Image (spheres, rainbow, N blue to C red):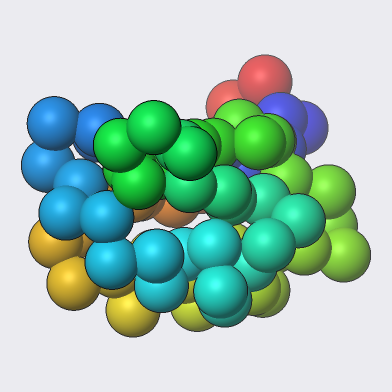
Amino acid sequence: MSAPRLSADRERCIGAGMCAMTAPDVFDQDPDDGLVLLLHTEPPAAHRAAARMAVGVCPSGAIAFHEPEPGGS
């Protein structure tokens, strides 16, 4: 079974930093422009709950959590 994946749309990001504050082991902010930096596209199990929360608090909807398809590889 494949792991859940994250994606980040830097064009949509407004640099609020909520993702980096909520899940600092998964997200960071670019020091040059303040936009989201995705540290792990497949976050370790220990960080998935925080990553899901970060998706929910992102004010611009720039990050997404993609669950694997049931029965998919």
